[in-house]
Length: 150
Image 1 (cartoon, rainbow, N blue to C red):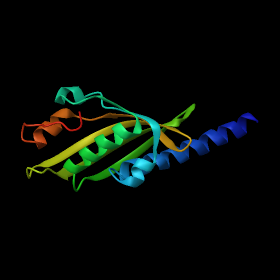
Image 2: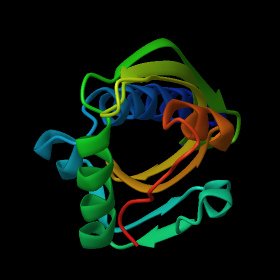
Image 3: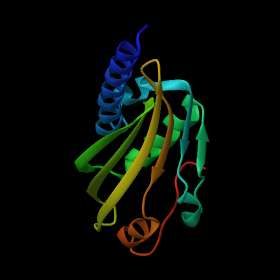
């Protein structure tokens, strides 16, 4: 295979994975989203410990359980300003930057800015590392945060 063909294939794969990343984000909490998860998926939330939440979920069953619980608390979540970035030399990796907002069960308003690093293998999400501001969660919950899915 020539270098030009390899470069084209990597570019094509990166585009496919950007589209998959978009689906993962937009289908939050749905069975369609869960179908995009690999059996050995890992999700990491580096700032979650500041809210006494687990930072690491491993395996499809554990990740699906976490996302289902999370989705119950984020009814009406809308996402906007989606920006997708591929990584040269790593077509399986996609970075996503976006904003979201949602009403909270307590009647407050939740607004957040996210950065996600997603890695795909054979059309499935195998790793997601999500960064967000814990203070925005605390503020939306009027200073009280009861974590989900230990």
